[in-house]
Image (cartoon, rainbow, N blue to C red; front, side, top):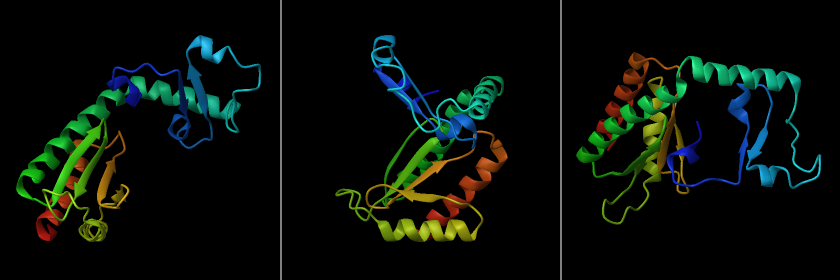
Length: 175
């Protein structure tokens, strides 16, 4: 459920917000008992913590994650996208890196495969052309040379393949 679970690290605290309420404002802090028990009442909190509506929404989100096996779905989406992007990376030197965790996957564009010089212009052109073809993707990264995908976990395999087809076509035309 959390990115931290993919690594050999045990956090003292985890903060959560945004998606845990599916759009209803809520936030949460959880952690080891000795850390959570150390502050006095009211010293750990936030603007959106404890709202009754937010709590109901968060419980429903957890229920849906479990019921619809969305954690497993996130990993399957990520594997599909990474596999597809790595095949593209073998074909195009302008793809400097492909990386991801779960359903969040990034493809990085460079001007030179050896120096990994960021290619912001190519990334922007790919974004524009994808948008023209109905696939909304966004740039990320310090140099705006990364396209980050975070598809909805309820996307169908057909929808995912259609979007990846468009992205691949655009890269083939512009790279």
